[in-house]
Length: 219
Image (cartoon, rainbow, N blue to C red; front, top):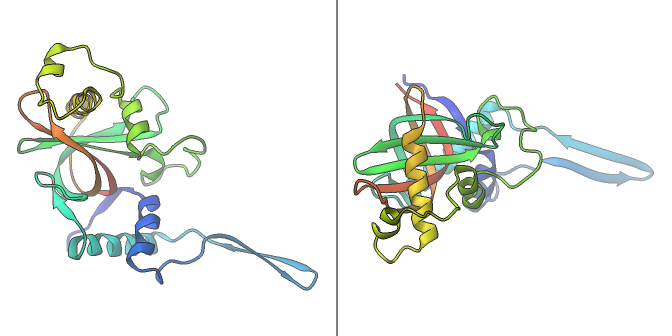
């Protein structure tokens, strides 16, 4: 039997997608307030246990596979699946970054996956108490440094004119960060939401940026 050792599970994406797949599956969370005569009743619902969390994830992934737009790294749909060696960690590494980033390459495509560090398994739940989720593209690119304009004329001229300067800058920066991560690579499997794809200004490769539903170590 082959086991997955989950590194990252995005409950935020599961909570977003699951009601669209099966409206009757979800259960209430948070607090429910009710007044019974003169007694204020507060009912609190616990966070899902690990088994339930993975069951909900598997339901979403199965639906994307069977009915959704789930492609591959080389031919991504709205979502894409991959299995490849990747390096990963908080970015930037020297700061208490809200972003965790995975980088690798397969075929002619450089792959970058970014998400909120709070979704890394074992992270403290209040690590992202304030601010916008790092799973979204604008704050992710800000953390990577890809929202600034590039002055490199090679970068500016190497891509077809259908991409504007901001797109070229973002693709270039994702390429640089994904290939610049240090440390040992680990073989991982993932399903991610496609955020950005285009031709890299370097080496004639493509760049694919996504935000994962999950990332898991595999043998």
